[in-house]
Length: 230
Image (cartoon, rainbow, N blue to C red; front, side, top):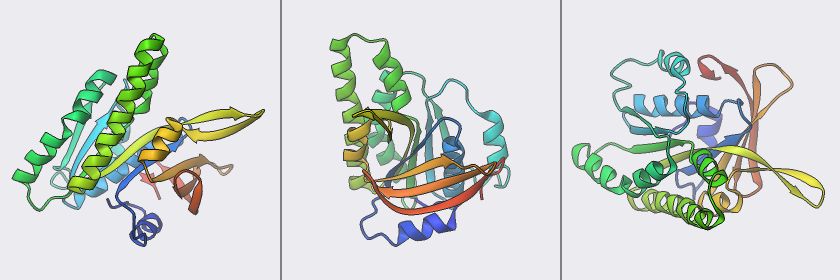
């Protein structure tokens, strides 16, 4: 996986054990989708096959248009967008990804593959809230199975995977702590994460690159524009 940000790319490439399986997370509206789309288009322009799975009801057409305008049509040929609005459908897609990867490898032997989920846990929580307790046990199992399957695909086929995730406030002993949605489940399966935070300076964001669960390795500031982070 290549990032369109040199400071992040340099840090990732310096890691001996980085396996290309990570999450980007933060509060609503901080730029997670912008970051993931920017990363998707950048990798597509490098000739990599990009599968972008979007799971929210309102597809950000204007954002896609703005972020893609710096690339040619040929550079975006490898970008494939999938809209999924049901957790059961998402579950089925993930369990069948291996067949898709095998078929891609048959047709494009030299191509690397990047799969981006924006996101996984929002559909999970929507289903969780309206389900009975007995079904919630099944949902927890399915979420674990999704992340485990992605880990297997990452290790077996050297597929890069980026998961967009949300911030949750966890209360412990009277104090509030920010964690990514999925908590320990995410920390178990996903080794590295990128947290995006708002900054007091307008349109700026603070970025933390960390080894899960809490080992912050790198932090820096970026400006968020209509054309992406810079």
